[in-house]
Image 1: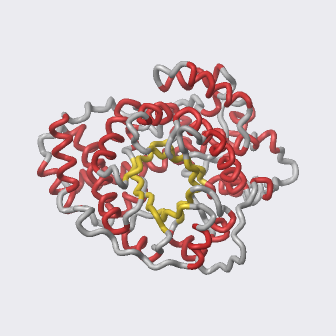
Image 2: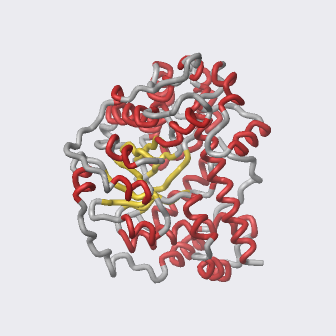
Image 3: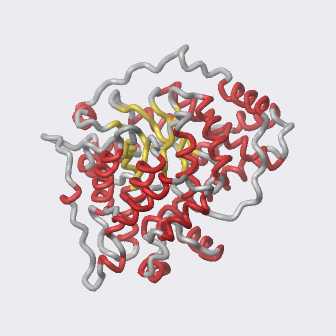
Length: 421
């Protein structure tokens, strides 16, 4: 899956240059020299953490994170959009100029990828030094369809900071193969932009990713924004069902379920017991004001999804959000019997086994339409494709999410180019 067609990617830098870049991003940031001061505990977060849930803040802004940070938080998650916000306000300009000066020998095509890598790594290191814990870092979106280069840059992130970094890779055929390849190297991968149980189960049972994601809020928004009910409970039902299935396969390889894209403080309470919650600071501030007398993990059956009169759940294929189905299990068994040669092979085998809608074949015009829709696809455009099993709500949301990240990545790249003129 790709948000857009990109030019052929340049070869990664030589091992010598890559080591110089690693040393540069680490320069002046000795994480062991000044460990972060322990933060005070908060009764709300202590109660939630007592259910076994790890708490991460969903922000790349250090001061915003500091305002919401509590002693129970153990990580921060960033992405292309959050990093772009920091870059656009000029917070990284001096670093960009110095990086460009130090590595002026890079070809123009390679310089963009490398500067993005350096920015992500440096920003992640600053967060790690200030807060400690796990810090998720994201790849340039041009790498989304390239298994080999995804692995190269994931390894390099890990080499920068193995104690703290988790590498985010977008869900897709290439992402699944890259995560599987990185497994033996113990590079922790979070397969992001997930929107269904079947996506997470595939990521856990085949790729054995360290983390899998369900973007809770966007599932509800798909239904609400498209006039398919209010969307209440759909995201919660999906992530709780996914948690149960992921734990089914997390034996030899431990995969943790992330509930992402939380929109309301009440969702934080409802999702107690999920392995990891990534919580935006505004949602964290709202949640911390709630009074909870008993922390009790919910069952997915507690959330009923109501559709308007005349709208059939079967037409939407809604069950594919929170059910796996035998075809997905057959696909996993097939992939584990013989690893796919490439991403195209994986997608073809999915089509042969009846789950091609996980990896839809879209034209350039359709990809542009996905990008134009924003984070939430317009259902009327895709309704017939969904009914005919050529796409699904989860795969469309993944494509839309990647396209949104890609738009912010391009704005970041444009800022860097303008700064270096």
